[in-house]
Amino acid sequence: MAAVTSPETSPQPRVYFQTPAGTTEEPETPVRKQGRVTVKYDRKELRKRLNLEEWIIDQLTDLYDCEEEAIPELEIDVDELLDMPSDIERAARVKDLLVDCFKPTEDFISELLDKIRGMQKLSTPQKK
Image (cartoon, rainbow, N blue to C red):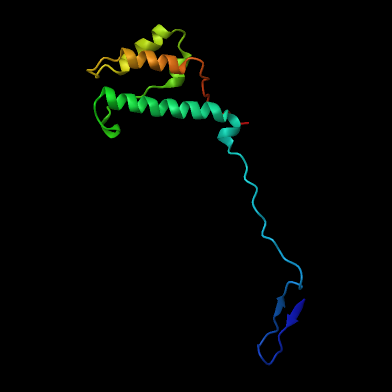
């Protein structure tokens, strides 16, 4: 229904729209789409990778006997390790990264290699 104001109350006529009695308008609820990252990659694989990264940080804080913020700048690239043909090469790469660590690293390296075995490499999404 439209109601027009009279010229006496307003210099220009205005139209107001009212909802007819008995009808209720429900606001549209937005449909949540799955994010591009979880469409491209398997959600389980992303969860595994996140858990592995958290485990690595915990282990490095123990190895370097410090807080997370004080860990020396080093990057253990899981995809790089997965690209290597053998566990011997992977172990050598991680050992090179941990050269500044004075505690024994063999157990950490062994557990890390066990954890990444069977993981999938997360490749960069290709634009279509």
